[in-house]
Image (cartoon, rainbow, N blue to C red; front, side, top):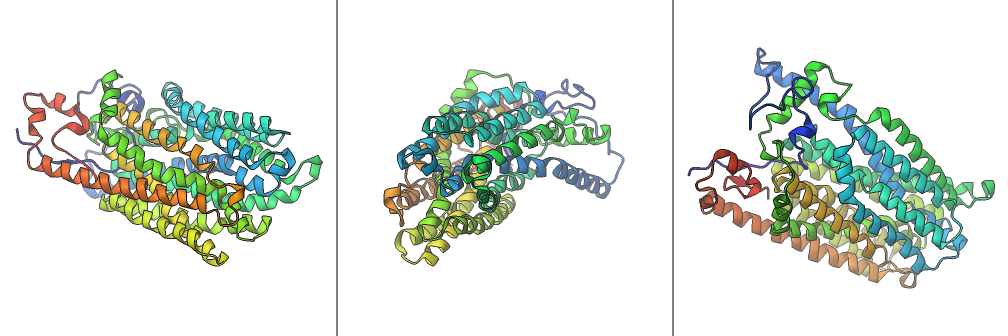
Length: 511
């Protein structure tokens, strides 16, 4: 059997037909056959005219979807990490908690967050995005507000546990939601822009905390309480507004005309990926992911960047404070490293989209992080150590979005991809428990234990895992190009071959 190479382009998890609801009018495309395209509303136009319309449509989607969703993730990441800013504003002293209890409060968030993620993905598929996403925002905003009203260790633990439950659906949910709108080759840079909101939240969080903590004593509340209360109230208000700002899937989007809606749906169907076809859930998709070595190696890679991400974002204000800078100045000095990380995250997203070399991008960026944390480990000068935090941020943040899209590119089939990303992201978030306990007060001001653990994560899991994945995928691609995997499709129909997903012989992995 002669196979033509089909390179999987950059993507997040693609939904099924039911979720994209492809049709000229609601439900109209659900009767299309396998791989069959809907009618083209621009069939009579020239290629130049069609390209101009397509660019204008894509720009409209970007303006209506990306900015607000980035804001939502910025708020989400700000609300889960602002406890680091609150610590500098006197949280531990007010609640009479020990450094160990503080670390426990950090850890409990990641336990509930990781356990709830698979359930929230199911809820997102069953409920409309315009209901599910605003609802969980309001819930975690309430949890955040109650953190500012707590008086003891038990209260902060309970609030952090329920904050993790409420926030769990946003990051995987929005990545899935965006895949309902964009073709695979368009998704990588948008995933990077979306995740850059996490880095921006670090910049914004430091500035905001520095201002809010000056409210110390107002209403009988300490400055750290006001950080939680005001940011929690803001989250609730943004959640309410989101009922009107988050749109549903393309066939129900109110900001599109009927013709534009048809164009969006046709673009998705024309993507010609088997995961864009309708799939009924079967356990074989679950086991296909579990038995795939790529699933576990991607989990290791994501562990290598997600563990350091949480360690860095939770403890950067504390690290800078340990260099001798006072509370307010430490808050402000935490801003520039995040801003630099946001810029590089978007840049790497663009480069990886164009070159399709996501593994090399991971390896190159991780070297920046290794240099940064080597500086933090070895240098005594506060200036050199502060420079190390810049390189540390640059070496961590871009790899999150890049690793997620790399795994998405190389896992075909909507349910297999969903299970794979669930394992990958869930395992990465569980490493937040480790991250929450490696920066101990007894290690200040140099925090060599914490820096050493992050350095090890970057070397062994991010750099080492990415290098191993790159080599193994390259070797597998060579076998497929040489025809050594053709026997897997022998005697199968075209549709059966398509349902093999990334195991089909003509599927060439993104390196």
